[in-house]
Image 1 (tube, rainbow, N blue to C red):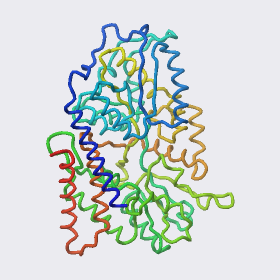
Image 2: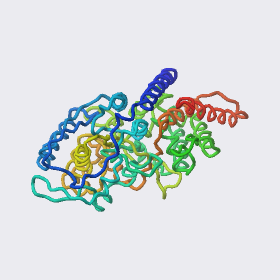
Image 3: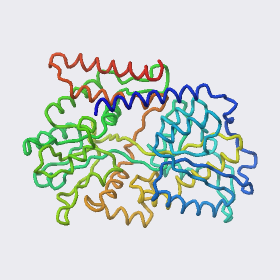
Length: 479
């Protein structure tokens, strides 16, 4: 498993370097100039076709199609052609190739590192002039609205999700969030209630809970944490320590004493049998969490994606779930100043020579991200968290949230927890190589956990692993 993970990382690094070199050498004449708002704004009489690349499955495409019909009632001359392009990586690879010949779509699902890659060819349209535009447009129903976002619409976004759009080092806005997920703590509520265990709010409390569980069930692994990379990055954010920066020549700043200390601490947890991770275990740790208590090596807590809640629920036995699942915010360094990771797709617009295409693209992503009914339906169909706060006031969505429980409606419960921690979301800097940093800090944790070192050499060995990770990051981006 470890070798395969490293091999995949190397292959992805080669692919990324190839894409970077292709984009860097891309003929600038093929990239459209920065958008300039037309004097008369958007021409509703002109027919425009917009292409949209995404990863939606059938259920989400059905929701999207329904709301494209609604959008076309407002703007009948904007034709939306959307296409599922495999995985997120497939979207990135396809667009990276198309940019080199000037054939990129108008809109795409994206993660921050995708945008940073596309911007090597300066292909992504900044959104500030569109967001701040006070020009008006009159739709086919006679409604006159401003092209940009109202202050109310800006304030309605969950702030951490919205701010992800300007994590590129220049202060400019490149994306709007579409739907999001996060990490949450799943726990065996039945077991916790039976033994009087309180849900841990801090890492110190979590350590004590792991110790208590080990006393009750010595053969268990109390905690499974799916993503080593997310754990590392989240700790950096909670501790206020350096991780990466989009500015300057030294992008990889995670090699510091604070970070080495928490890796050493969690290595000790691993050695005590308190925790395992997805890569070390060889599968998602939900496979341990959903095991019966009588099975050796089961767990009672799992930290994983809020979008994967259904996989954290045990199978029914004789028509009933063996235990009830509880969901809480991941443990914190300071429970009064929580920090939790933000994941899930955003939307970016690509530069085009025709400003009307850019405007039409903007009107569509504005519609998807600010339309309460769409955000509600998309969340219920996907299990992802809506990106605007006002969705909670939608009667249908409020009824959906009221059903939340740790059984049949566990996905709803995970979304509810995600909304309740709306003020805790953070995002990391985005630059060419930010995804490499994620991979390397994940590998670093794996190596530090499983290594058989003498106590006297642990500090020096951990320092060497950090040095190795930074060196590999620089190597993979050609430094």
